[in-house]
Image (tube, rainbow, N blue to C red):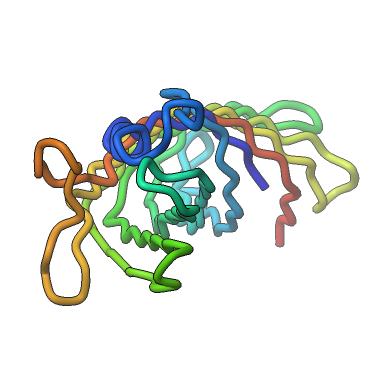
Length: 190
C-alpha cells in the first residue's frame, strides 16, 4: 500500500471553480494506491519489474449553486520498470525508472439530481523510484519505496465523447498529475 502527495492541477481548478469559496481545496492532496508486481533479474546488477497499481482520490464539497458534489478519480497503472540492483548481506537497494500506458476514470455525482456522470481518459505515465528490501528470512523481505511520477492521462470524456469542462472557461479538464509517495509492502523470492 502506498500514500502519495498528488498535484492534479486541472482537477483542483475544476473543483475550486465549482465549489463554494469556503469549500476550496488545496493544490496538493493525499491519495492512496494499492500495488503488486513481479520482478525478474537480468544479471547481478540489473532487473526488470512489471507492476500494477491502482491510485484513487475522492472529494466531497458544496457547490456554488447549492447541493453537494461527490467527485472521485482513479488511475489503473500497469508499469514496466528497469532497476539497478545493489545487493547486500540481507538486503537489496534498487533504483528504477519506467513507464506504461495508464487508464483513468472519474465520476461526479450531484445531490440535487442524483445523477452520476462517468468520465475516462488514457495516456502514458512515467516514474522513478528508490526501493529498499530487507530480509526477514531467506525468501521473505520487507519492502519500502519512495516514488516520483508524472501522469499524462489526458482529457476526461464521458461515454458520448463530451469532455468535462471548466465552468467559467469551457476548457477541458485533464487527469494529468504529479505524485510523490511512499510505499510499504512485502516481497517473496522464489
